[in-house]
Amino acid sequence: MSRLKELIKGYQNKNINICWCNLSDIADIGTGNSNTNEALEEGIYPFYVRSQEVKRKNVYEFDETAIITAGDGVGVGKVFHYVEGKYALHQRAYRIHINTNEVIPKYFYHYMKATFLKYIEKNAVNSSVTSVRKKMLEEYSVPVPSLEIQKKIVRILDNFTELTAELTAELTARQKQYEYYRDKLLNFTLEIPRKKLGEIATDIYRGTGIKRDEVTTEGIPCVRYGEIYTTYNIWFDKCVSHTTLENITNPKYFEYGDILFAITGESVEDIAKSIAYVGNQKCLAGGDIVVLKHNQNPKYLSYALSTYNAQKQKSKGKIKSKVVHSSVPAIQDIEIPLPPIEIQNKIVNILDNFEAICSDLKIGLPAEMEARQKQYEYYRDLLLTFNINGNTILTDRQTDRQTDRQTDRQTDRQTDRQTDRQTDRQTDRQTDRQTDRQTDRQTDRQTDRQTDRQTDRQTDRQTDRQTDRQTDANRFY
Image 1 (spheres, helix red, strand yellow):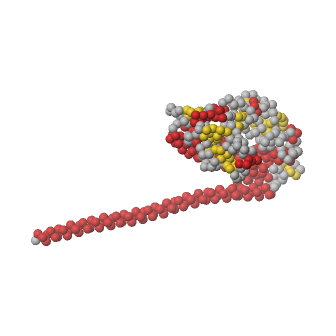
Image 2 (cartoon, rainbow, N blue to C red):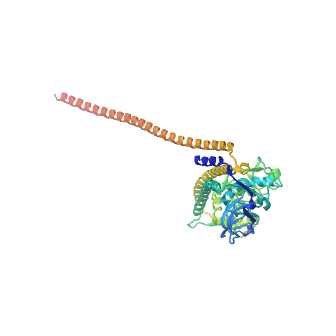
């Protein structure tokens, strides 16, 4: 970080000539022609829509370097993609293609991520920004320093984004590894009977609708179907939401061991996600939830229902649309391997341990990713927040001091950790030496006592034998 600090201070302490221009002066701006329902799971080309998710398509519309941002929806001012090559584009997503050699596209990408949301919020007619008009993009003001400065900024910020990308890839790899071993463990090679859920169920029924404004912080614990997708994983023992009976006309309960299915969703791939409840309370099931009662290991059923094979059955026959639905008969028709309860218990123990390891990674890696993202945003804003006086960037002493303090704190923390490790090693070595000396002294004392006892016994035996011989001699004479 000391090298980065020097670069930033050197960069800030210069009066750098800078040109401010509208985006329309340096870029071609337009939208795509595709709709979301044209996406294909195994498509050839990336298909950019209005979210961070990149879909696929077999036909491309553009072949260029561009910055993509959402034109409307919840991703306005928050969704950005940097693309090089062939791609397809949603009809309400914008492409920004830099058409001059005076601006590095990646430099503009970082600048837009840092400032565009504030710009559209400032210029929006309504209090909430729901869409971006082309004119807003055309009039978006962009600072253009020299190519040398742009390259330095890009190099610094790309280093941070690469770290985040590596952590994201690590998290994805660990998740895939977990899914591989889960599916392998549940793909039995022995002759294990397969049963449909309708054969396993002792009862199966739908929940009753619980509206968002009927959710309370206290009362009867409950689950709404959306929470199955966003809040819970394989199993859970506590509900995050509550409600009151006054809100429910025909309450439907679930209890320990029950499996809950969300039969409404936004994608075919995720429809009918299931979770096992292993808590001790009696809880309410919201609408669009199916409750399945049974006499099996609930965690085993939940693991088996999360496999690739089970998900294929859940998705079978479903049509892609904005809202996807399943049903009680469709749930009853899902088939899973059902070994004896003893084997179910062993499988659950293995997968629970594996899940715990993955959960630690899911906690540790995202925390590290969040820290790296904040670090990136800090330096990005530091490098790309220009203080204008005419056509120059002026030194910001306050920014310098903030940089110094943050860098000093990071250095102090690194030094503290290093010192702690050195102290721990020294303490360990000192403790080992003390322990060795104590052990040696203790061993010496034990050896001395053993030697003394052995010597005493030998002396006693010799004295006894000598006394016996003298006594025998006296008798003889």
